[in-house]
Length: 125
Image 1 (cartoon, helix red, strand yellow):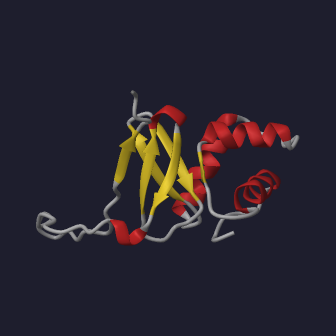
Image 2 (cartoon, helix red, strand yellow):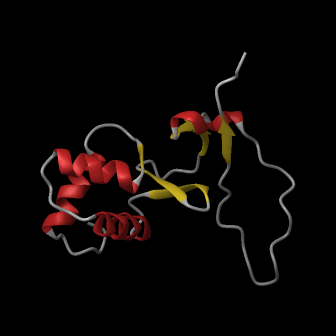
């Protein structure tokens, strides 16, 4: 698992995360899925594991605000809609966004990537 020791809990969480298609999941959602699957793991362990998977390049973190993040199993460069009233993240088709006119980074720095999260909610009448 990309340089991580394959503990029982990491393997169980990886099976939950990577079974099926790409998805966006919060630590709380994964904790609920783990409980349903009878995987005995604390929320703190899930947070730690998600961040370890991210550091190993297996996941991509999508921060929707200062206190809420989702983890994306698709690590390719792409952007997201955050649907506020559903607390859900969905991919924006890659051809839909063009980023131009980025500022020059500080001396000695390079831009590694740009994350765009467009916040949306259902239109009210």
